[in-house]
Length: 438
Ligand code: SAH
Ligand code: SF4
Ligand code: F3S
Image 1 (cartoon, rainbow, N blue to C red):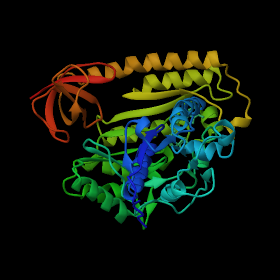
Image 2 (cartoon, helix red, strand yellow; image 1 turned 120 degrees about the vertical axis):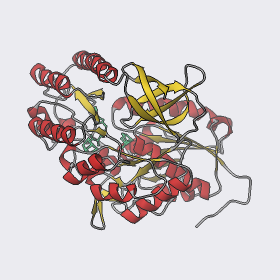
Image 3 (cartoon, helix red, strand yellow; image 1 turned 90 degrees about the vertical axis):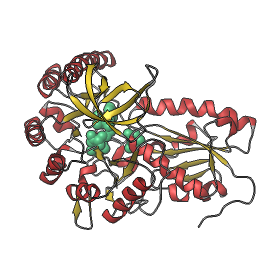
Image 4 (cartoon, rainbow, N blue to C red; image 1 turned 45 degrees about the vertical axis):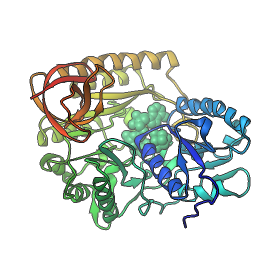
C-alpha cells in the first residue's frame, strides 16, 4: 500500500475551511499523505501540492475558497509541476461546475475519496476527479495526524440522513454511517497514547451514532472507560435524536463535559416545519428542560438561521423571544443562504438581504448581552480549566477551557497544555472569562 517515492519527498500545503469535521478530515488526509511519504509545509511557496479542504454550507464559504484558489494559482504559474487540488464538500456540491470556475484544478476529491488521494496525485488522467459518495466509507482503519494541543477531534459517524430543506450536507457527505465502537475506542486510546487528554466526537448528527448494537450513549460510556482520558465532548447532536442514555451520560459520567450544542434554527413551528427539522418548538423546549434538569448548570449553545423563505416578522419574533427564554451560553447565527440542489432552493426567497441583515444583527446583539450575563454569573466561582497554551494576550497568561467549554485566561503558573488547573473566576466578557489560580 505505501509507495514512498525514491526521489525527494514531496511537500504538501493543506488549508481547511468549514466545520470541525473538515478539520478532522484534513488530519485524516494528512495521515494518508504522510504514510505515502509526503511532508507538510505551512508555506504555499514551498509546496509541490496545494490542497484546499472546502465547505459548501453557505454561498459565502464557497466564494472565499474560489478567491483563495485564484491566489494560489500564482504558485502553479511559477512552477508548472505544482498540483492544485480541491477537497471536501465543495467538490461534491459543485462537481463538474468546478472546472468551469477553476479549470486549472489538478484534483477534485469529495469527502469519501481521500483513501485514493495519493494515487490520484501520482498519475492518471487530467483532471482527476473523485466525487463519488460511498455509503460504507468510514476510514475507521486509517490513523489521522492529530494537530498540536491536548484535544483530539474524532469523527465517529459520517454523512447525514436528515435532509433539512436548507442544507447541502446530505448531498455533499452522503448517507449516515458509523465507525465500529471498537475502532472508536482504539482511536481514543491512540490519541491518549499520543498525549491527548480530551476527545471531541464529531458527526453531523453525531447522536444518531449506532454500530454493532452500541448507541451514542453507549459509545460515550465506552470512551469514558479509557484510562488517561480526562474529557469527552461531542458535536453536533440533532434534537430529535437525543436519547435518555445520552442525557444520562452527560449527567453522571464525570468525563463527559457539561456542555451541549443543541441547534435550534428557528423557534417558529411553521418555519421548523418548512425546514423539515423534525421537532416543534414545544418539543425542543421540553428537551432543553429535561437536559437542564438532569445536568444542573450545563452550558448550552445553538445555531440559528434568520430569513428562511417565508419567515415573517412574527416567525422572527418567536425566535427572538425564544433567545430570551433559553438563555444560551452562546449562539452561532446565520443569514439563510439558498443552496442549489436543496428543497428550499426552489422556494422563492421572500426576505430581502437588508431584512435578513437587520434580523441577524438584532439577534446577535441580544445574544451578546445574554452571553455576557450568563458568563458574569460565573464570577466568584471556582472552576477547572484544561490548559491549551499561551494566551494571545495579556503576556505571561495561558488560555484553556472550563468544563462547560468557556474560554478562560489566567496567569501562567507553569501549567503545561493538557493539565487541569483550579481557578477562581474574577471577571467575564461575552466570550472570555478571566481568572486566578487557587
Ligand atoms: N448538523 C448540524 C449542523 C450542520 S451545519 C445540525 O443539524 O444542526 C451548521 C449550521 O449551519 C446549521 O446548524 C445551520 O444553522 C447553518 N446552515 C446550514 N445550512 C445553511 C444555509 N443554507 N444557510 C444558512 N445557514 C445554514
Ligand atoms: Fe444539515 Fe439538517 Fe443534516 Fe444538520 S441535520 S447536517 S442541518 S441536513
Ligand atoms: Fe461545510 Fe461540509 Fe462541514 S458543507 S459545514 S464542511 S460538512
